[in-house]
Image (cartoon, rainbow, N blue to C red; front, top):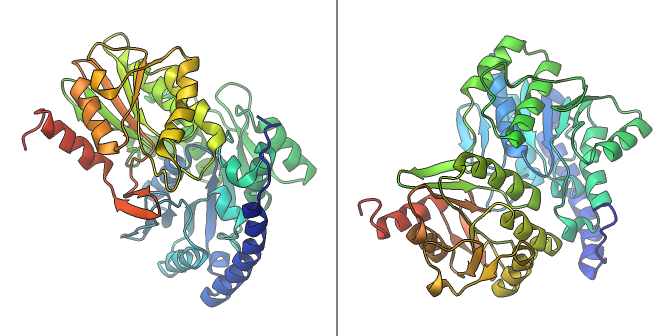
Length: 425
């Protein structure tokens, strides 16, 4: 992965010029709002996967332990008792929105603001001026190479957040750790480590505190949140109490239906996230039924990950339905074909959607409309099966061509259940 490099195009040269504009805009935004981040302790959370859960969990720990704290995440921003929408397909809002939210948190009298931060936001100066009191990286895997061109560039952008922080917190078990450590040591940046598998500054025995049933990837999210909370002075017992009462954010392994079979929605949209989510669900499934996976890949985004997404799905799913996921102006069927190469590597066979049967395994099909794909999955699900839909989760729109169309994954599931007489109309 370290050696994977995409060719620079005119779009990347244009982005470099656009970033100068973003920097000027960021300076104006900071001046306009009076550099509000200087009056509050920012906790920055970045990484490829697990950002939203970790951000929400840190917020929950601080809130339940009596701290005055606000939150900005993929799902929403929460300042005091007010919730704000943070956009359709963006994790970190526009720089003026960022500074406005920070100013609101300061005006509310908060001591802390937990902020989910993407590599795009770092590169485009959307979080310029935010100097985190503590920052944490969850993991760094294959993602956004269409933008950053190489894994190394992507990693360096992520690590940029740590380098401007008071203290950094890093995952010593992640494949990125040796490179992250080398950069931090070279810059003499203060950092702490957390680990489930080796000696580190922060460790947690999940078998001893009622959290042993957590999926492996969520144990890392919990441990990252624990490490940050301990660093800022929250007592162990207060953290454990908060961990026990935490509910995952919307669209994170969220069960929408659980009767004859189960339907789960999840935001997984990278090879690593798909692999982790499906592995966790497959473990719950055991030998009781099949795992039916409905997903796609975004258009005009990192095409190099598509085959790996298919392979990740094929390693755990029994039946796969490929469909739309914000294909934008790309050819949907070309996207699905690229994903299917990974499924073929896992010995899947293709069948037309009208020929799919209830007992099929190691089979995939393509259904262009997401609602139809979900309906088909519900139609062929049997008692004991699990249907998992990945990629959209909490998002409220689907991009087709240049237009955003309203979308609600939960409603689409409910509609499919009604059509197939599992729920009353």
